[in-house]
Length: 470
Image 1 (tube, rainbow, N blue to C red):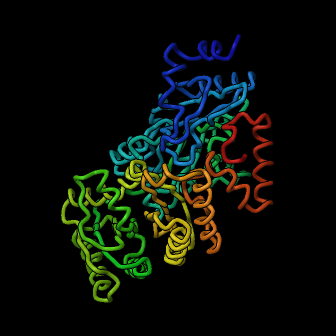
Image 2: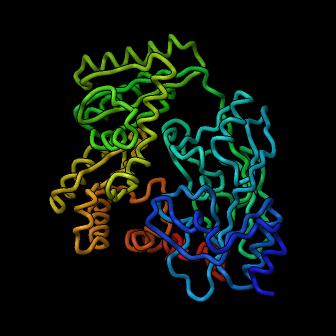
Image 3: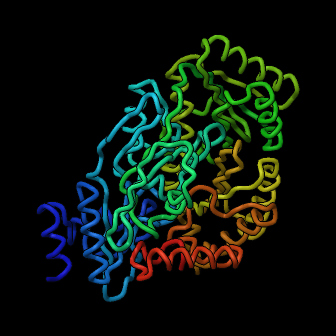
């Protein structure tokens, strides 16, 4: 029995997609990577995932796990060429069950196909918070954010996905199911296996379920849009807010004027509150009365204004104004996808080095590509910078070798990060886009350990071939 026929016997009639029905699954989010797959398998539960993986392993076909396909490095999309045995994409879109909410234990157990926004809503219905927050939360899935160790806008206070996962269920490369769905804060019984799969980008197995850590739901927020003249001023404001507001500071997002102009061009109904070279979206969250939290923020911002660290400050005085501020922030990814060609880098450096990186990288790019524009949006509170090098469509089309330009920009920007002790992949992962960068920049001992782990768990190399490790 061939693999397609076998998969058809495992899944219902509409559970195996082929031909033109695969169109939405074989292209990456940017629309730049169009790949090939044997089929799309749509399991409904962990048992079906196990059966699919077992069948693929026996037939020698690769398996590509796919969540919401919102990643930016191509981890969930197949390569354009795949030899004589095309991979099977396993989409978890039908696995959306909230398995359990333990209010007393502050945990929620979910299928890996649950949409992040649905998990937020389920937690909030019980006055709890799952803190991982992304611009793509309306479409990204839990399995995807676990497999990429997603960050987002709340890392400053709550940490990345890794810090908010207590247990996992994983289908291993031979079809075996590892059930590690424990909601324990303390479990010192050997290797912490869940950490192997968080951030592994589907190269060691398919995450099918997760136990997520919940937090008390903040009842009030205080939000402000701040204008300033430089990232160095932003660092001074960050230090001031941390000193006065402590853990109440949940959001500290830095954007430059060029990035916001792209957002407004993409969404003309949005308006930037004030003109300035640099902008901050700042938010506090707490359980206290709204008035006292707002007073804390406004007093601190007032001191920053008096100290010359800020050019202007516009507090959000209504829910609609707060939502408008967040719409500007969350509009950046879509704006960059539709604004000419943006070569986006996902950098992290020590927080105190963010201003130096931005100056060094901007100058280095402009020295080589004088017509390029830099677009910046940074989770500055945790040192993560999304540094975009923007080319007008006409300039890009006129280039003799766009691929060489992409590699040159990547080298320039990543070299600037290296020089400051940083990383070229802060929260987006390696995927298929950055495998060569990892091979070139990672410590040899680190690469050796990763390859040994991969070989031990997936000796046939069927799990997400070509992703993470080239």
